[in-house]
Image 1 (cartoon, rainbow, N blue to C red):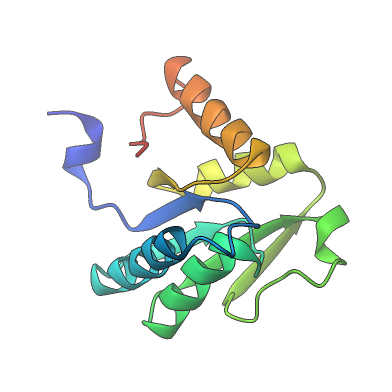
Image 2 (image 1 turned 180 degrees about the vertical axis):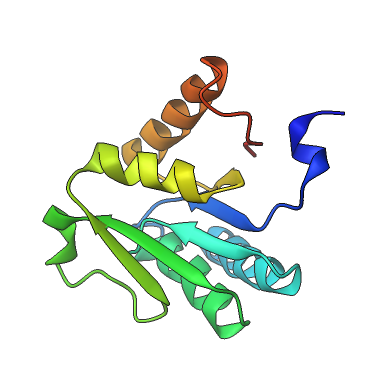
Length: 139
């Protein structure tokens, strides 16, 4: 039995774009994911923004009853992008620390469409898995 099947996945980290406002399919998928997390009594861990797919996931999760943790670098915290649907905000010193904290808080990762930042997050958690830094599922 692998490690992931021996415990319940509770905190799900979602990586996604902040600028996919115009694609209805992506928007609906993000909203649906937020609702499903709440239905399954899972909590959302994400970058803390309220734009694009990030905003759709967090708003749907929050409105459906999920706990929402936003982890955001200090440089971005002052940009008025922190969503009002974030239950708890952790401000960290750097983008790298943001990824480390997200890894620490998450039981699993889900990646939705995004840009270069989303790809960087996917590659980081995938390479960390390859290096045996974690054994958390990535989907």
